[in-house]
Image 1 (tube, rainbow, N blue to C red):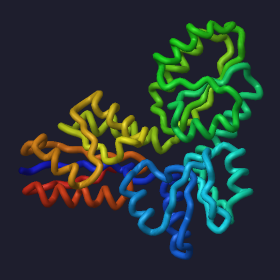
Image 2 (cartoon, one colour):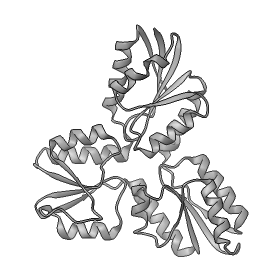
Image 3 (cartoon, helix red, strand yellow):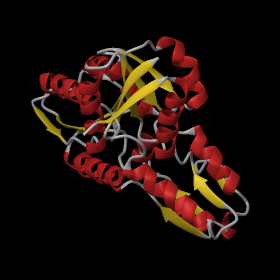
Image 4 (cartoon, rainbow, N blue to C red):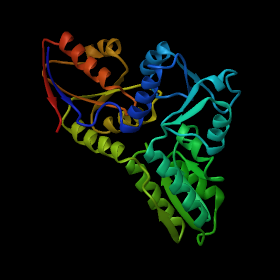
Length: 298
């Protein structure tokens, strides 16, 4: 079987995740144990490899490890509420904060907008770590996961249309949903401020995927089903063509029966997918298929 493989230009770790992972790796070179407040990255493979080296995950919102004072604690890229960071600083040997600068800018933007407006609407997943952290910066943000939920919230609240409201987003949400949500808010309120806090890297991945999916027979999205941005890419790809999620080379082999000779296959990934895994997927395809014409998107 021969296939043409188009590899996305924007693939592998994003800047924020790479920074967090590399920080933990560097610390583990000189420390036997390194604590991480929460799940460092939404990728089981990366987590397992780092835990074998001495990384220990814990829930910073619950009871703290008894030996925390003797070790370093890393704050992951998603960030944490300020009061939780302060708690860690009071109980840990030291705290290394690797909150993504783009996520931190979102927190600061939200805080500023909340002071100047009657309501702050946030497009996001209520249980996503970014949103959990955001609640530590802003009191009672109105969080909704999509346009449909926003519509239900607006009908239920029946707020005065003269209220000043603002709209921001979790950094990994898709731009189209953000735009549709803004249109809905504008219909309900006379004064709507908006700040597009979606990460530019995620927008570029969405735009590139939109183009690749139109010229592909199938799209492979590499990543974990626990990753919100990976699932978002899968959903976008399926709007134009057949697409499936693969987490590792073994998972890929199970999908081979869905391939056929002469297929054009595009490969994209979530921002929590390591570059090494992308390379391994390409190598695995070369082992399985008689011929793979690899084209790197530009």
